[in-house]
Length: 173
Image (cartoon, rainbow, N blue to C red; front, side, top):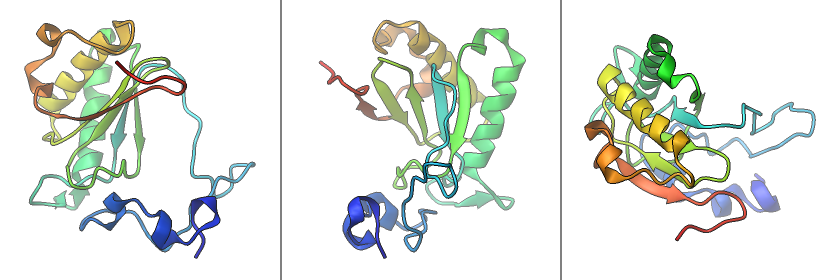
């Protein structure tokens, strides 16, 4: 089996893919077909976005609730909260399978062009968490580099940050 960069999948698999409960299928090779067939990437709007993992576990102890993954429930809550208030109009809610943060549950990646990005997790897939994520995302979108003063953080995101990622072509200070 050949993975990215032409080497065997076992050499290229991120450690997160080996975590119990991770939905990533190790038998499927990575691909990026120029015409989109079998593509690993799907083009989306390039602006402030909350990218939610729709395959995340429901909680640290449970994969699903009533047969539905926690990530799918969080996406549903994010979309409902976004639709309920025009203040969220400039922040896209996008979803994808597996952010490779499988040791956590209900994870999102907050990103925007030329801003530091953040991966947050350990959320309860409900309206309160979705509102806190989107409230933070509004401040994030309005910030110059993606740095939101702590005093503006909604209580619901405090303690949920996992990592920050620099935008392409930059490193963060």
